[in-house]
Amino acid sequence: MSIKSINVRNQFRGTISEIIEGPVLSEIDVSTPSGIVTSVITTRSVKDLELAVGSEVIAFVKSTEVSLAKL
Image (cartoon, rainbow, N blue to C red; front, side, top):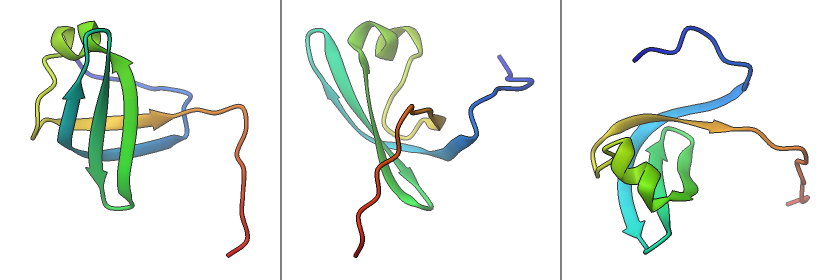
């Protein structure tokens, strides 16, 4: 499967570094050049997509709100 185009602008290519699998939901940590991106998806999707530690993925981030804090 290949993606021809997508409207999500925030994309982070990386490698799955950890999967914490639960009965319904799972946490997926993706190591990217910008840091770790964590996704919470259904455990069923983890199995359907055959995700595993070391898999190369793209994390798509789409949000209706972006908050900032001054450092």
